[in-house]
Length: 210
Image (cartoon, rainbow, N blue to C red; front, side):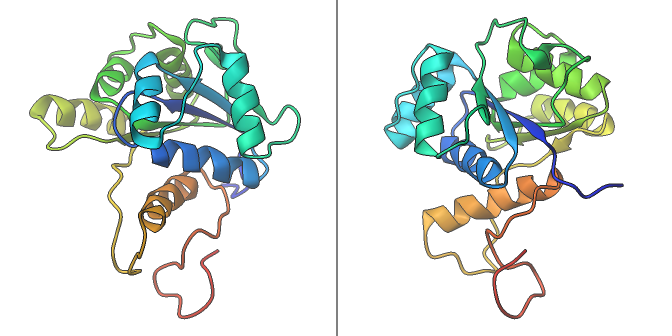
């Protein structure tokens, strides 16, 4: 299997707590040279304001301009799509992203993906990723998990979906919240085969992790 970084990664922000994970993920993907197709739910706008004092406008074009400037993205590197933008490329199996990450992922979104509902573009893009055999990573920020949550996650895991709860490790002695965020983002990037230097890897004795 090729270890090359995906050319295009779809990222979806939903209304679970954990917006710093999603924002840092987008930043790292852009820094790695990936194209990013970004989707966000209405509740994600509320979470971004609550957790990061960040206003995500309702118009995707405004969010695209805002984040492209924030992360110094190259022209055309970041595209933002609306929740009902059914003619977006990632709505069809003829033009899916190379990988998709829902970060953070609500239990409602996870359940909808498990049921194949495809009622909005986030759910449809995830459905396309599954049916086309592309890597799909869900970062569910909830605790504790109910039996319903666990059954939905097991169903998706059996389909090859990666369930990656944001559980930072402490063996690298994090000193800041940012370092704990980077630990989780590093695990996501590893799953979609995007190179990074966010942290020293287990077993390395010196220098930064690759």
